[in-house]
Amino acid sequence: MEITTNTTMGEMLEYDMGIAYVLMQCGMHCVGCPSSIGESLEEACAVHGLNPDDVLAEINAYLDSRETV
Image (tube, rainbow, N blue to C red; front, side, top):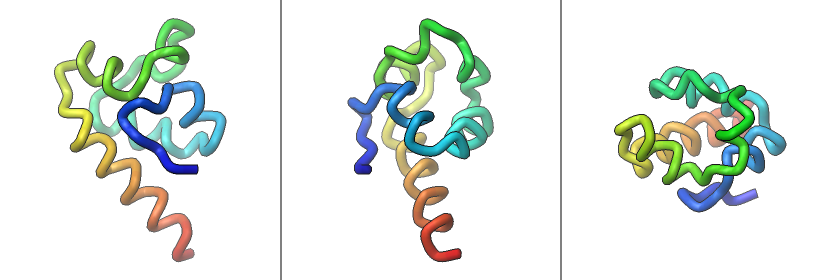
């Protein structure tokens, strides 16, 4: 799955629950909030004052490291 800033939080977490840890490390502690599931990564970052490209880079780094293990 290719994750972009338009991917919803729900889609990402359904794909890999490990992304929740990455999101929390970036400052998104509302990962389990029902309203966040339908938000895109870009929308969720805007709510938290985060740069979506930076968060996406962290997610992709996690996914890349997972694939090399």
